[in-house]
Image (cartoon, rainbow over all chains, first blue to last red; front, side, top):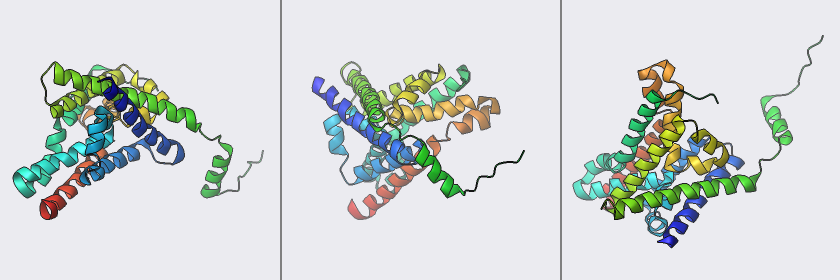
Length: 119
Length: 152
């Protein structure tokens, strides 16, 4: 169990450090890096390369945005297996609905409850 | 007094500023992103384990539970102004995990609240999350079609 935490820390940290390298050494904005990460997650997952990382590192692979892409791809895959072509349209958002709904709900709530801070 | 004219073009100006600005410290930036990002993932692992062992969730639901909890925590920390400070220190360490997705929704929604509930809060929630969802969902649909037509 302790080992799992260490692996989550190391792999998650490495994925974040790779993102920081893009910040420091390219002119990519964070928004572009996030878009790149989610597409990379979908592609890696489609080729079966991301599931082994999740098995190895747990949340170290699912918490970074590449894990979001992986969840989209796996959702689509399972939905296609269950209901055919229509699954390509329903699977992605079904699998990620919890996170997206939470972000919309808590985002709206916080925007109502708090005042903007001076930067 | 004569205005001093600078004879340059945008490319040359960009080259000049690149020459004059000190290189960003690679080592410490990477280290800061690494340990904060790693810690956030470890926290996600802990929440996920709580989901499995205490709430009897299966692995996939536990992972969703971890995402929702981290998103809630980020929204709250963004609201009280703490997440900005973490972000300044950790860079990609805070925006690559799901916390970055949550912060990218809450932060502009909060900031543009005065523009109204519809075009302020409602629209600005998706300033960055919009493109991320567009390309993420787009890529997954392409994969789904290929999988349905040629692989499955």
